[in-house]
Image (cartoon, rainbow, N blue to C red):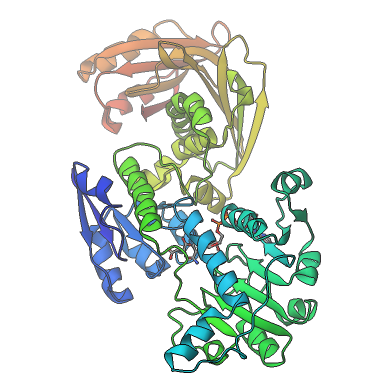
Length: 528
Ligand code: NAD
Ligand code: MLT
């Protein structure tokens, strides 16, 4: 099997080396494709790698019938329709750390260039004007830098600004007073930050909540003469409001690396002498480009070779040590879901998953996703995966509850799932036996010991002498060899079940004879 990877924005050749050297992966870098060309091409590829130029729209994702992963060589994923990717089960990965340093250094470069009007002075000199009066700047020392968004880049900027002997005040919903103290900065509310800043720098992602965070109302609260730097995302600033504020002299200057619409070659902000700008160069260093391309290439190789990715964006990321603990249970959780899906023909309204014993203190989200995958596989086939399992369940109106307990009913670990339909509920439970493997230990109210794999016939019957014999002979008549058989019953002569593992897949025709047996109430073929 050969996987094909399309790189549609220029990426560092050294950075994509992990992809080039991977066996069974073919890489093509075709940049400058129009959206229409990309829609046409994408159907042949398993992976798409982009920077920020390519807009990965719903249409492109829908056309990517084989698409499994979209890699963003950088941080911001606002050029990718994440909702569409999740719905189509396409995992999106990014490279969150690779360009932090470069973006922070670029921000500081912009801050200093803005304070000392370096681009304006350089431009005048290039025009042969020796103009010292118009380019008087201000010192950074003693000034207050307001940082909005104290994530990876915001933190690095804050530390560097302290090196310039600036006071730093920051707002981030996740910033604690302890963290601020550790960094030697002040924690403020958004209003406190924008009200006291001499220089304001933005480092949030572009989200619904941060769109036009800096608008006319916010600017009205700022100090007269404030200078603003945006090396995060265009759209965080309302550009019209900034333009007006500069025109009115409220904002003394702005340094912009990013714009709401890019490329922004003809922007009216660029006509203002108070505005200095770069064409989205925050991450444009040799080091950052190599680093983000390496990170994202590794994740693409990992996914295409069946390994777990490190930087998923549309899937909660689980720390490596936790993943090591829960990964062995993935198979068991999925098989429990699959068995349950076979045990009812009704609409499943709710699933209650309980995790106990050794599982009581681990992150169980990935196990739930696997159980849901198994449960809904009969509807969605291979289209359902870890990425879209929760979304597809929600679309089906399935209510999912998780319960974590330490009581594992005598087992070291236990996953128990109960599904509810209009007419009642069904339970399947399983455990992972150390050194042996997964076992199903309960089906409905019966205790069993079943290896959840292969071809299994589930029979519900009345406990009467001769039923087992009839089943055995009927299967033999159809040349079906029994590997294992388990019988469970509620009481003598009462309700009972059989779980028969056979060597070959059984057809509906093989099963019709069984349903004709008087004591047999239900026969289901489980393909695990
Ligand atoms: P990050 O995820 O590490 O940090 C973002 C921070 O913003 C988080 O701490 C988050 O809590 C905070 N935040 C979210 N909503 C907020 C709000 N309403 N108010 C205040 N804070 C809020 O991301 P990062 O790697 O530091 O990147 C920051 C930004 O820089 C992103 O927009 C990214 O796309 C952009 N970026 C630009 C370039 C460039 O070339 N110009 C390069 C790299 C990153
Ligand atoms: C990013 O989000 O990483 C930056 O915008 C850098 C880029 O890829 O251009």
